[in-house]
Image (cartoon, rainbow over all chains, first blue to last red; front, side, top):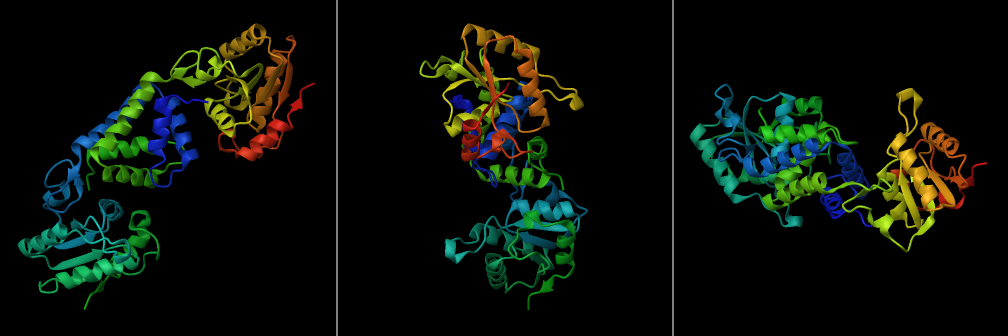
Length: 199
Length: 199
């Protein structure tokens, strides 16, 4: 049976998404097919707008449609604390838990020698500049609760050891092997409360 | 934290899809954000094309971008057997299992008195016309293995009892409470092989 080209193509594109196999992908496309044309076009235009309007904040590296982003511009936030995360998704998870009122810094990567990955040097340089310019007092490392996250945290500590800034890290209240993006609010809160200073 | 509008909107749209909650939706949108602009626009245009090009075959009711669809036009298929399914998704599942070489008829609904749902009358009329015009010898009912599917099958049998056509139904090799769209190939094959004539 020949499915229409546009259907085949969308099933293929959709199955690339995280956690989606071929059957789930097909199910979603058929769900879309049952919606009215306006809904589908709305979805398509939301995607197009995403591509056109969303970029990374030149300060913290978070996703935004303004520059600097709303977090960096917010004068009510504590500019003496920066929470360092690996991805913008992690930043959203912490922010939605409503447990932190400082600024963020999105690394955009992690140190993983086995996968030949490094923390982007540009991001580290920017972090150093921000710490100096804002006279940041505490850097809270919220890297993944995994080996790569540990390595990333130690690498950041080592890189910034000449700066007069306290460096702490989220405690292992986070489920080991998990990911920050999927942690629940209580776990995130525990981890923030019991953060440990890196000596 | 204010996520960009386009991100918020897409997360909301995406979470409407079957099996997707808010966190999975967010995860997908962030996955999309990590792709390059071309990939995202490709996705958006695949959706738009879906809305513009895909419609239902005027014969079998299946999704298609031609009319009649490729299945109805295929002269190599057995036009004496019609497999009746509730949705186009069910049709794709059977077709992809590669176990049936006849034609299809997509009902576009099921009989479910509790939900106040009926089989679309237009679809039943069209089925009657097709059986007569094509001199169909066997109608294989592949309705859901649930109460509603049973009711739908009996309603079709009752509606068409004046026609000289053998009516059979997929056997309960199908897992009860499941759905045809997610059945595996072997189960579908068992169910087709052991189909029972409705007397």
